[in-house]
Image 1 (cartoon, rainbow, N blue to C red):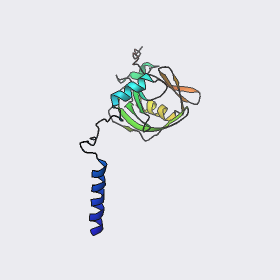
Image 2 (image 1 turned 135 degrees about the vertical axis):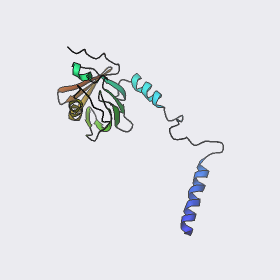
Image 3 (image 1 turned 45 degrees about the horizontal axis):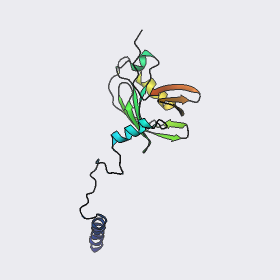
Image 4 (image 1 turned 30 degrees about the vertical axis):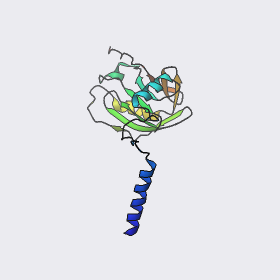
Length: 164
């Protein structure tokens, strides 16, 4: 029991010693000078189009790409190799592995479960899991399976195609 008390006192003394007088420890979620806010990260990512970081919007190739009423979007957080966004119907979140021009999405994606009438969300996710490389070209992100283009994304929202 004495050892537990001594260890607790040492931890407390170390924490007090490391904090300088008058300084405040950052509160969870509060940005410090060295920690950019999410708005700053978005601006930085958009300004440097040499990274997949930031928000991307699907450039629809078929009217069915936006049949659920929302345009699919994806946001890459390169600091933790995570992505989030929406499938065109449901919210999604997961992780990816990137090396050079290769990228692979982890199949353990978390999604909400709303019904997507008229939208083939399964095909969208299946294609996402087939992706194995990418190419950046200005403000466009191309996702491929080998040499086949699976998705074209843009930093700007593109008007969805009208159904014929």
